[in-house]
Length: 240
Ligand SMILES: Nc1ncnc2c1ncn2[C@@H]1O[C@H](COP(=O)(O)OP(=O)(O)OP(=O)(O)O)[C@@H](O)[C@H]1O
Image 1 (cartoon, protein in one colour):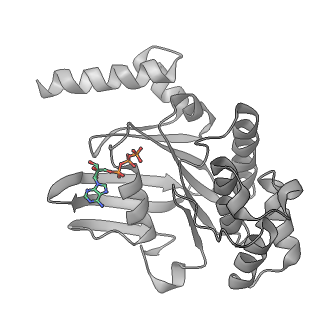
Image 2: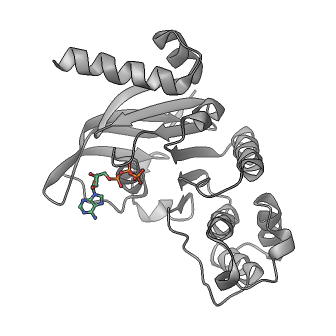
């Protein structure tokens, strides 16, 4: 299996503090990789480094064979930030169609993206009138419409009800099956089981790079949250 992303010895400082400590990892192509870890562990910072918008102190980040942030990657990498990047004074459909135009796609792709995020019925509504969860889904639709090879999603399921969460994870699996590489950050461990591979971050260090099954076997528990805690405690014992 080839890797869509490789990170080697990545060091990032933010606000005079070291946020990523010589982090090395890889993201397999055509799979859903979960980026899991507590709040403040460095998930967003790592995603920003993959997009190429994060100032890095040292290390290398290679994305789809090119250095992260290379101009040639702009149309090949989609990034959905935690706060929705949408136009509130446009309707849902207008937002999707505008993004489609930017990516050289048509109205059909824009409408398909709205169906994929469950917003077809809200297409005529102004984004300003939507709930936070709905706005997040408009943002996701705007990234999907460009059909990027690598899709980076920062906590895309926050604020969504359980039905929508399951539907979106199903959609992520479908995208991966069609060849898209996805990196999905979350601090909800019950979502970890839906990923093909997991990168577990804690305080800017990689605690584990494994499949959910490997993690369960290693920690001797079926519960991924418990497995994560076992790894944390093991790390603390080693450090002590
Ligand atoms: N703009 C900034 N300036 C200075 N420090 C920052 C900035 N943004 C984040 N940090 C710090 O970097 C560290 C990692 O933050 P990051 O946002 O990457 O974590 P995260 O795992 O994505 O958290 P969350 O799940 O809460 O979004 C934190 O200690 C945070 O305080």
